[in-house]
Image (cartoon, rainbow, N blue to C red; front, side, top):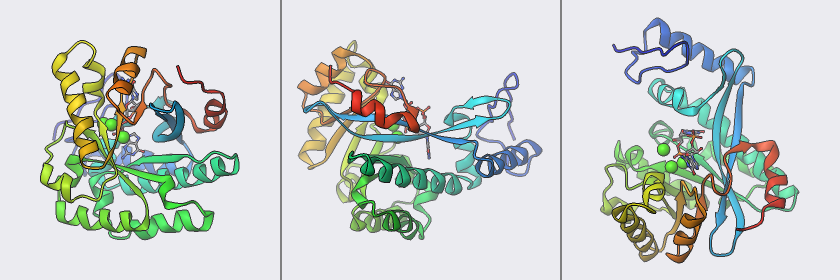
Length: 278
Ligand code: C2E
Ligand code: CA
Ligand code: CA
Ligand code: CA
């Protein structure tokens, strides 16, 4: 199997075979990361572009490695997905998001926390019960949690994904299609899936100011979402001009560096209290 290690940094090739020495050691390190509390929850604000208000945040995991420093998710998420470790990681993020939603409520802020899920999570038939066990004891309303799922995660096994998603939706959780427009999607599934939100992929949003086709894709996606009764979020909102364009096109929510980069969760409540719309 192909293996790549780049100058000591933690780049593991996605095709790393599960039995190899290297992947075994990464798996061990990841288990330790959870036990030793090396994972950190970062939050990136989501704001209402029409009303200029902070309405939630996306939970993004970081690995504070004792020797390698802050490891970005793309260097271990694909591996975690391949080995099944992702379920433990998702459980950690979901639990962190539920705790944070409680903290925010106690501080007088009603926020919606978005959590990324992968195919393997959707194949777990106990997922709805596990989420219920995180929310109910804390009295966090299910609508305070939004699950972001990519089109490809659904298309892996659409029938099974659909059954899990229907249960989650019936519980009152919000569901979002992440990176919309980049995967192998089917509009027929979009119609059948119990989703609440479309998230326009950042590649389109970041290019729309200079590329007319990207601008048209953004505009059509907003229209499509609204015609299907879905709310729409633009990610990768990096400039004042992009904010103005999106607001004018009727886009509901935005997320991106222009508003704020992902920050350690401890900083979020103070940031939200001080934020002013541009
Ligand atoms: P994603 O779900 O598409 O998350 C958005 C990514 O875009 C984040 O990168 C965020 O920092 C970045 N981003 C946000 N605004 C901007 C912007 O204005 N410009 C640019 N250039 N980038 C922006 P991050 O945190 O490195 O995460 C990368 C990916 O790793 C995520 O993409 C998601 O697929 C995955 N990931 C992160 N945390 C988790 C997790 O807890 N569970 C799972 N399953 N996947 C995760
Ligand atoms: Ca996401
Ligand atoms: Ca995304
Ligand atoms: Ca992505």
